[in-house]
Length: 386
Image 1 (tube, rainbow, N blue to C red):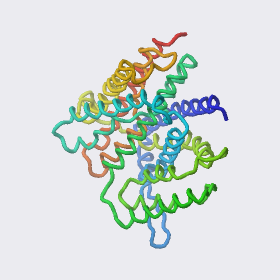
Image 2: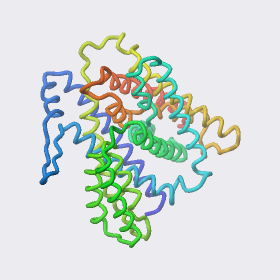
Image 3: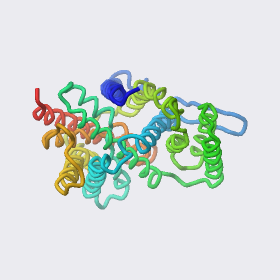
Image 4: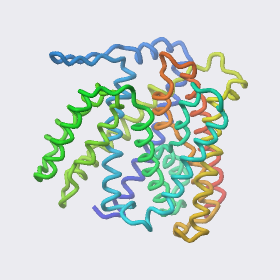
């Protein structure tokens, strides 16, 4: 498949996924604020248990979605990152300099704004990483509404930026959002990684052995206290990329539709259904939702556009071909659509059973993401040639 066809396929799928994400989130909001709210909560709280001898995994449906289905999402992210680093947009410094600078600014500035907004509240500060995320599917879904007028170079810039952003999110989750670690489970996970390395070095190209060991790795990481989704990323890095029909490309192409059209919409439906009961104008001024919304809208715009402007002015990188400053500002605003990854990080930062801020993060994420989408679309439309 040529690069042009691959990009066309990727953008089409991500854009459609973004629109489906919007529909799933809206549906969840409607259902949880209607007479069906009890059914919605019952679905999320439904106990699901898997038992095999001494191994027992019992979780409500919501955690199965967030721990297992999202591990497949992170597996896809890991596959994309490995491919881009070895063969794609992250293979050369000249390709990564501009989106890399933009991604760095887009993570630092929103986090600083959130911390400044919630300074002095230790419990609230746990959510500092929530506004650092960018939802590539949602952002490309908004770009799709503008049609063919959007330069391909601008889409590539946004895609590469989001991939680097995802890599940053993986590092943040691993370092800051892992529970107390079980040495025994972590040792078994390390053994699984050793087996995966051996399979790779021995030239095994069949996907079955990798996926089987990957499933055991997921169980070990789940039991270790490190977040289970990181098992997906670790597995991806051992899938071989060599050859015309490489296992990595085959798995990535097979997994992408399932993630785009099933896993992410299900995740959005399960996590976006906040109750609007008791919410007033004052609710939006509380530290957590205000810090998240401000970080996503103002922080992403300042961080992404500011570091992009600096990198181009200092001649570290060139302006994307066919783009202008107004279009870059619009893309910087679209980067404030956090949604999927922001909601996921929020579920790690504020435990639903113990944190006083559980649920407030959703209010800030939905508000900030919607504002960023609206402003980004408006700015881009005004700066695109008809």
